[in-house]
Image (cartoon, rainbow, N blue to C red; front, top):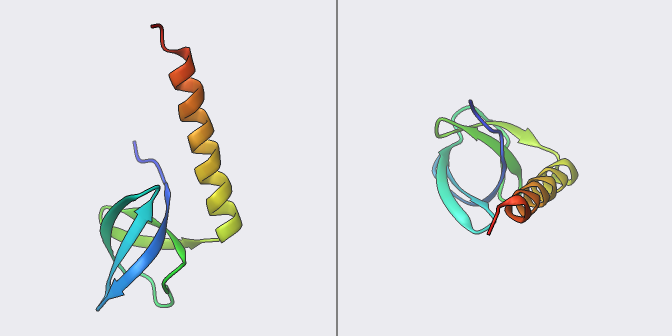
Length: 78
């Protein structure tokens, strides 16, 4: 199963982007996207940025994921 997490492009060198998700940084190829720029949110699969995501939708998705993780943490028995 694959989970699509919006990642923000923070740097581009040649055709490789450094993307960030809540402080976790990784590299992703931009070979499949013609118009990605620093600040864009993208979905990364198997090391390739495969699509751009609207900033508002990306931020909402990330916040929803944070909320789900916080809820799951609260459900853990001590």
